[in-house]
Amino acid sequence: MFPEVSSREWEVVTMNEQEEDLISRMYRLVGQRWDLIAGRIPGRTPEEIERFWIMKNRGCSSAEREAFNTTMKE
Image (cartoon, rainbow, N blue to C red):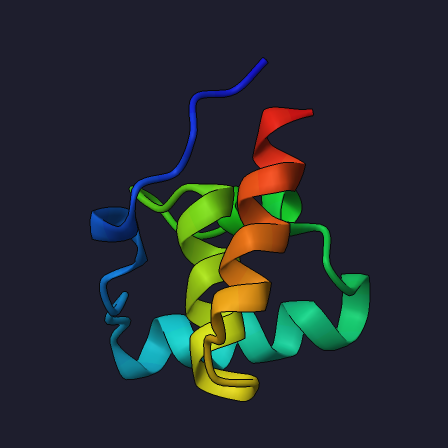
């Protein structure tokens, strides 16, 4: 079981231009396989990559945060 994600962890994740480009390209290739994408970016976790993607591409509603929290608990 994973610990609950606090609201502090949902602060904006910033990426440099190269990281953003790589995330976009990898997402098109492998979809939501955040662990594979994070493996290509030193120092980044799958959770960081997913949060960045959600915030950049869909915004970040409280429902999405709750869904993410629930997923992390399973």
